[in-house]
Length: 395
Ligand code: PMP
Image (cartoon, rainbow, N blue to C red; front, side, top):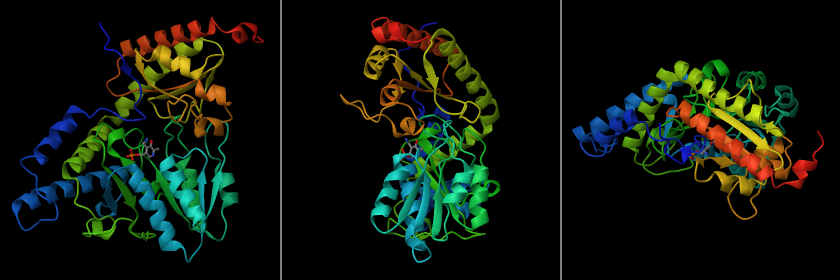
């Protein structure tokens, strides 16, 4: 069987649109092109009906109510709306927000801005396995704390936080809990009520849906979460997020989530099997490899390994034609900054840069996994064969 190169292993960055999702979306570009707010005629009504259906589906998928789902342009916007919206709404009650060091920039950067503008943000470290200790969270909470934001699953190391424990600590102290679940939705089961989540961000393009569409879950009872809108205009989405709805995108999000949840039990077992095959082969054939993040509490399709005694840039170059894969650096410039997630786990700059983040997709085959394993083994061995440091290492 021939393998089309480069093989895609970057599903934390994005996923291809599933053909079933594309098929569901297409009529909403052409036949049903109406504005979902134009409910005076059938074009608008068809669009509004479709949006309502997706709202019900997304709500059901998360254990929420349809009126608790706000459609957005993606997780970056959902995170900004949640963090800034809550901060603005609750600023009279308190100014303290708690988050953790391994969050995505779409959480950290809005919080940096809030910190500059009168809020006090505590960034908690993570344990060596990448998880936040909920006891540490409990100790960080003060009388002025209004919000805790901790991601469901990390986008670089795939680690799943103990969201139930974090939710319980927040509930005990009567504090709102936001989770950036961009990497987790459709990959692991989520029930917002059972987990004590008050706000949850998600994005369609991480679950085989289109780019540029997502949602924010905002709890409307026990307690009712108040949010100050960050985008104002036509009053769509109950005034929480104005702007003409991206109907084809929303339909795509709905279909993507439906397919993902339907296939979740089978797909997560299958992908974890393929991921473990890749992991075991790399760990068996190469020494001086460090695995990043908890093995037990991890997304099924995710693997992050750091390769000692190789230079990150050289490793990426060696693999470029064969594998589409991300490394442990923020960008691919000449002197890339190592990822803040890997340094938070205690990795050195060099080791962080020599990291590969493997993200399998639902379309990844066993042949592709074996091909990837072989290419990585060959590349690392070849690079190390030129390394005096590797030769001289202490064994
Ligand atoms: N949060 C996490 C954890 C992510 O992985 C991403 C995407 N890289 C985002 C937020 C941003 O999502 P979007 O692309 O939908 O804005």
